[in-house]
Length: 218
Length: 405
Image 1 (tube, rainbow over the protein chains, first blue to last red):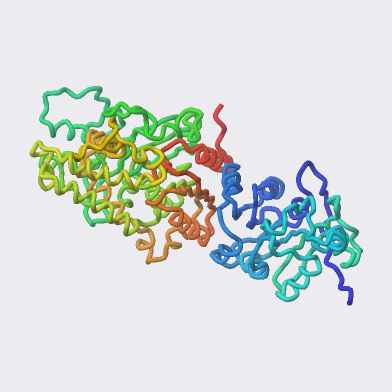
Image 2: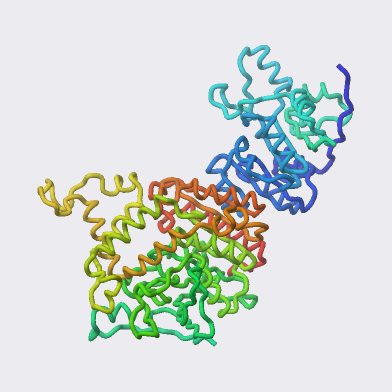
């Protein structure tokens, strides 16, 4: 396998306060004052960080009613909706960034979702748990069962996560979909970014989570 | 210039014909502010005619700030009125949205200036079929022109012009009130900073038109209706209006709520009487609803307002494309629906949200879980209150409104 050069990392101050590191990583990839759609925005924590630290015009879609109502009560512009079906209703180029934070693995058709994201937005930011992480590999190798971790505690038969992938898998999807990988970060089990110059296989083995900034090719 | 005066008639003397008392409430409403526009300022109606003179009765709560930027317009529903947060002059009951509007409430009257007008076509002081036609000196009855939701909103805009309010901080309302909110956002986008359409739709469904038609037919079938001239002839189509209300009231509830409240329980008896008395609690309840309603509402107003709702179709007004109604809308929206509302189901609200998204508008949407049906928007729904408060707080911050001290 040939080693491809990796896009540059977004460096920065990622250990502020109690915010989740992956959220801060995403926030650093977003330009100030941008128009942002957060798909699967949960309780709105990332949107809040983006609004407060990057001054974005943020919108959200969330599938759970509890999440939506919590977001709206926080003053965020969030609607109840489904990434798999509702992105089609948005016009082209409506946003600067469309974010999919820890949601990719819960979508029915991840490729369609990514393609819609880059139709609606100029850029897409995707963060996901890396199923190629060594702990998960060992879990399956020695445990002989579908891995469960602190971050992914659900049983295989009762989980919203139906499309797990590895960093390598995701890169292949981007290639297949003709998507430009502009930036990428992998975070280790302690939430720290891995060495910049480490090769992709190293990221795929030691990265517990990954954050990608994507653009349309050409 | 329109005449601006406070009309506070504490009691109406009894030596009046039955019809006069009702007509008087329409012309000189108690406990309300009244604004009158003379012949120089007619209201141009969708029906192609002009209404003049025009009278608008309204209530205000709180104080307008010096920037005139903290005004919230509340649009009432079909059978609502301007007494949103104060005692109703006829029934003596508290305001219909007192849970939501008042000092420290989600629509905080210590922070916002709340305006609630009686709707055009209504019967509590704004021009309607029971108002006196100056041309004849008698109540309009069916000679009052047929009005639309857009006409109601035009009249409200005239009220705001008079009050010197250029941009509303927010417009809020449920059901027919929600239709007015949507019409406001479509007709005057630059005058609406935030919009809260609750339990409504951008058009009235065939099923809803059908229910309204049953109500209207009940009224018109009452011999006391007299072709709409009952005020002149000193009669009152109470039975027809009560039946209309009973039918409509069922649509405001839900199967689950009716079952929870009444089930098949008997009213003050342990066995059926083998008659057509109100054996069941639910029958007794509906009869009570009908009787209570006719004390405070005018039958012809019911005809006109249901008709206005039937005609409402925002897409039709914009070349059949709903998105055109909200193109480049600067307004921020908060759309709310209720799971058990089958009159304006969540799918209707979702259609609004899809349109607003496609228009690039800033929109929040929440569906509240409740078994209380359409009426839930008037009831104690803490989740709705939290959402409204959060949305308004966010909008107030964006508008630069100070917190209440």
